[in-house]
Image (cartoon, rainbow, N blue to C red; front, top):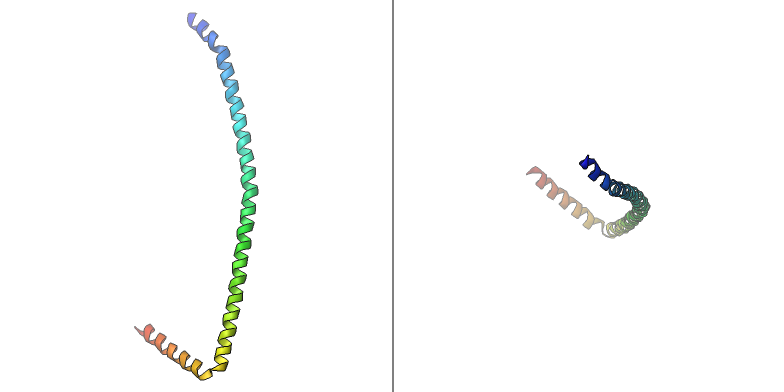
Length: 100
């Protein structure tokens, strides 16, 4: 009986503590939801920025490749015998390396 009386004294404190814990649980759930929304919206923006950057890099590589291609074509047209000699020499070199 004395023990029930002691427990009864702490009952209001226990109830108040449980109410605070439930309030904190609700606040944490709300905070987690808000953070998920924030990450989702910023994640989309970051993905778009990365995608745009990769497109720019791809376009740059294509432009540079076309410029190099044009320069090589011009050099071969201006010096066909030199280009033929270089191609033959590279072919022999690669053949010798592949044989080993």
